[in-house]
Length: 204
Length: 305
Ligand code: SF4
Ligand code: SF4
Image 1 (cartoon, helix red, strand yellow):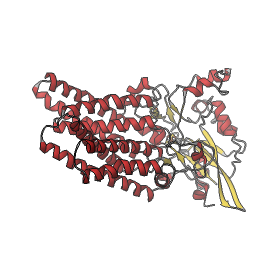
Image 2: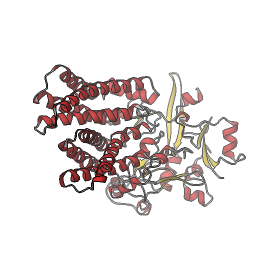
Image 3: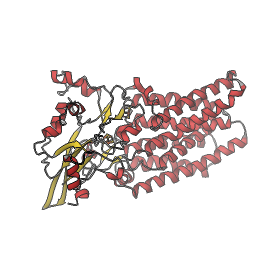
Image 4: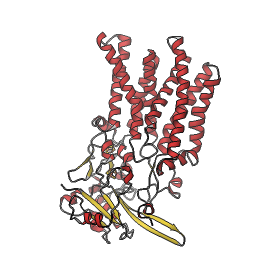
């Protein structure tokens, strides 16, 4: 069985947010909507300070709380482990958003879609074709670029990352690059105490 | 006064919807959802008590508060109201689904019970099952919202069994207070024994609510990181005034003092009901506003930098 997951190499990430831009472009995300963000966190105190960049994304949790609470059946997990949202079924109740410990759900507001990127109600041709995929009022999130994955490609953020800080692959294959990295460099999951069994790992 | 303003969200430690690592507020469930929860618990609590007392004005008002008020505010919250019916589909796993089934049973069989009492529309052998199914539905409505919140591991402040307890206690307290208010307005509760029982119950429920809210704060103070932030917001930070003055003072201490030390008359009864309901409504709003998510990942914690 395939079980897709991602590894973030924190040592390599330079915080350029090229992944964020690639994701917005690939998914035609309206103003204010992000499926992935590279967060920055400072540690230490002057003069011994350092800044670390932390890429974040939906963790496609094996025990996804967002799926468990969804009353309409809109959130489901594919056989390959990708957690999906069927916008046609979503009622916009927000239960998934308050259940996700990683704050990875976003509501698509009518004003975001109708207002356009410049906020003047004029949609560019790019926006016109892209926004047709969204249902206003529904909650959405990253789907690991499932269409690209189905076509044998890497998710857009992974393909774009200039430092190879994002690695995507099959966690069930012990010889895959992600499995080896997690094994060899002690991959850690975000907020493991929430018992969601994230399929995203951080290595240093 | 209750706004999670940009100033508050962006200050040190609170990341909000930014590219900083830190605490984040939940803002997905807000005032309309809090109002729907308030209507659900108040209406169901009033309905159950009124059914037990066979107090028809309370039964009808309870049905209206939940059937009309809760439904209206849920629909205003919903992103796609036209598809809301789909929420009935997953009672096997979702408390929201179970709650919707509860509302359907409560309002459906409750209305049938009222029609039966007035027009005798239900065959005799079915009257008892209709009565019991309506109460069962209302019981589900009075607790499910607390369960929906307590199942959210994301927000540590909510992730406690005290949430459904507080839902139930507040629901029955609001119900008993409204029974007293209706009685004071001239809709008489049947007999003196029942009246005395409601007053005693109201006092016990008020003390129980106080204990539960204090336990929630204690849990939050000594709980996970996110819960501790919620505790600080409610007791020391920008939510502290509405919480300490509104929820604790106006909503619990003042009505409790009146109940314990003042005679029961029209003014004291209406004051207790009014202040109690204001405090309860603020509680519902502030528990949502104080929902804090733990930082997604802190390198200092994970990699011991
Ligand atoms: S990260 Fe959040 S949205 Fe993604 S699968 Fe896990 S719980 Fe669901
Ligand atoms: S907002 Fe949509 S996807 Fe999220 S829980 Fe509600 S119905 Fe499911």
